[in-house]
Length: 331
Length: 247
Image (tube, rainbow over all chains, first blue to last red; front, side, top):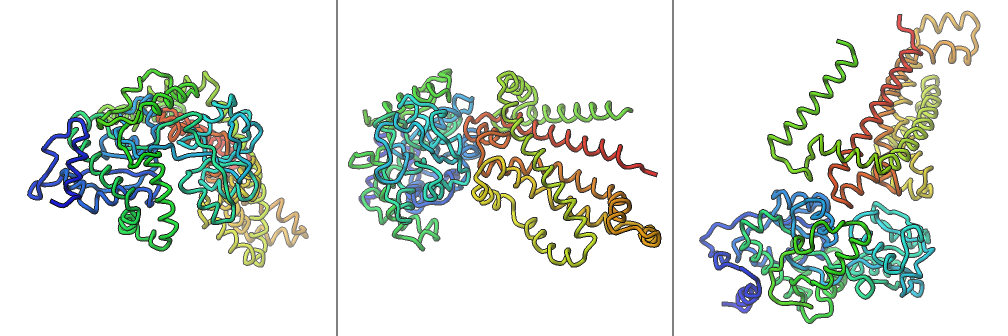
């Protein structure tokens, strides 16, 4: 058995309730499942591409088809069983679960919340209270960018009324910052700073983790799948974590898998590799390797923040929103 | 059967069909909410003032966009109808503006015009413009040639011919364009809001769908847009009936 094949069962041992049936032999028909990834094909989804291409999912009896959907559709389709797995923002999981959509967050992909406030170097305050009066560009009043912005404002004792919000529904807030239409923008810290640097703008970031911790995006499944076929879920989690761990150790491996899945990435390999390396730092969150474990501290803090902001009313407790499949703890 | 009774019957059949669909398919509310769920959400949205807050914004955009778009479209349509040269010069641009997906153009217009009400009114006007302008051009050219000749023989000036013969005879076709235009104005306002706005029914749809995962609220916003469209269409038909005397 190769080291790679050995690694999968080792990681699987970390998972609660991972059944031997999940280790399908080649003679057993694979179960077809669909994974929905948000937005569009991107190098940041490299773990899923690698796990699919390297047969890690097949090792657990899964034949995974990857599709791309907007976050709102993605959550509903997973809840309805039209897709088995999805990757969604943890904050969206809190809102949708409270709205009665039966999904659960089962695996952390991003150890750190990927959205930050971004502005020209030397202009971004370290204290969110100093955001008062700033012109802030954001895609819209939804999603992780909006949640991060409001969480920071809330931590600084501010509200939406204390700043000027400029919406960029086409996600072109970078243009607004470059034009000087806004002072700071919300953006993904593994992406927008690189785009701005390419345009000659060096930036500073204001992140949420030291101020108002929020849990990062991760894998979601529907309640029905979790109840009827937990082995598939644990197998999927183990295979994804395996790929994520390998990519964290060797980013080139992830880039190669991403190029196979999304050939257009090949045209800008250097940029894609830089984005991937930035993304790996968000997966690892300062640890030596990525962890699939749910960060209870970030979830508890995020739950309270989302409640204080009025996104959720507390009617659905936190433990109904998440499922701990991994024994290890990050707390 | 009166028109009102027929409308009520049609609405009742629609609601029963909708309810049956949700019951028979067992579709959850977060995919397709039942009509009574949407109605309940509408009551809460009205009660909290949320619905009116967004409806007022969209209605303003629609009415201003319609006013700007329809007025300029009639003016340009008359010019196109009366001058082959003007038609040859302007037509490619008008057709090109109509052919470019407004969804692609809207974000640019939003940036060019500062992202405020002006940008949204212009986007709305742009989408309204084409059907009314073309209808006006066709209507102007459909004036009875014998009557045109009669006006000429009586020494009518071009302006008199336009205002007293060609425009009145073009009215049925212009109103046809207006009927299409008012429904497009609703779409234009939503597209404009999706390009960049802080409030409006298009924004409410986005917030409900992507921000709150509140499918019933999204349906409330969609139903409100439909009511606005039906209302404006009915208003145009009503004005048309009063303005045009059918033989």
